[in-house]
Image 1 (cartoon, rainbow, N blue to C red):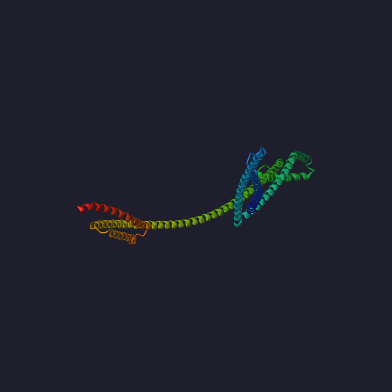
Image 2: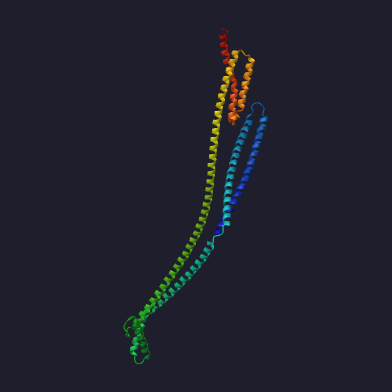
Length: 415
């Protein structure tokens, strides 16, 4: 069986190799056709280019137009052939790819069959086949012997029937001769006495009378019974041979069934081993999956903690920003108060400018010292920078408000 399978695989591999070789030849032909088509296209483009260069401004004659149209048609046909060749090449590449996949599958199957040990049942099946053939030969020989025995018995029976048909005339003639020559023939008396003794013996067996007249009848009956017994014996022997043949067939069938059951048990054992291996791999994968899930859960918890910490830091930073804004508003109010006081006292503008410069530097120093209030993130630094940029705008607004207030108050002072 193994040799048959391996031979079939070798035949399939040879066919696949032959198909791949034919496909490779077809591909080479298609490549040649493709190269010829490209060359013809290049020639056509060269001729078109030459015609376009040589053509001067003006109307061409009808012959040149006909040549151009034929050239264009020829170019279109070449392009169509090129497209068809590309399609054929793609189809052949697909078939080659499929053939390569099929060859790889067959090689893998052949390698797997070579690696596996041959089944022990093959030798057993061969032995079973040999034994079955021997038994079949023995049974055929026994059947031939039985047929020969039956033919002999039929011949013997035919002779017996023929003798029995002609025996009554002979017995009547002998009886007449015995009665006529009773005194002179002593041999006939001995024969009759022997027949009488035989008749007595047969009568003792079958319970019949021992008369001399019934001797011939009893002998015929015994011969008939003997032939019947022989025929029954032959029939019984034939039945015995048939029964032995059936027993042999049943034994062979039982042997084949036991071998099949054994092979099925081996196959089931192999499948169970494979299932156990797969289940083992599955358990390992499930364990690794549980570990990965635990790691993911730990990572998610860590990320949640980090997110909570970042939110806390963000809230602290926002609180610090609010504090800074309050400080800035307080400083702006102080600046406005100082500005108004200076305006009321009549201080110079230069001193006011110096005060504003010192206030801005103080704002900048507060913005630069934001790390004290746990401003570590870039967003918080950007907010502080934005606030420090907006401080001069607020200062200008306050200056404008103070100027308007001083202008309103000057008439009152003068008054």
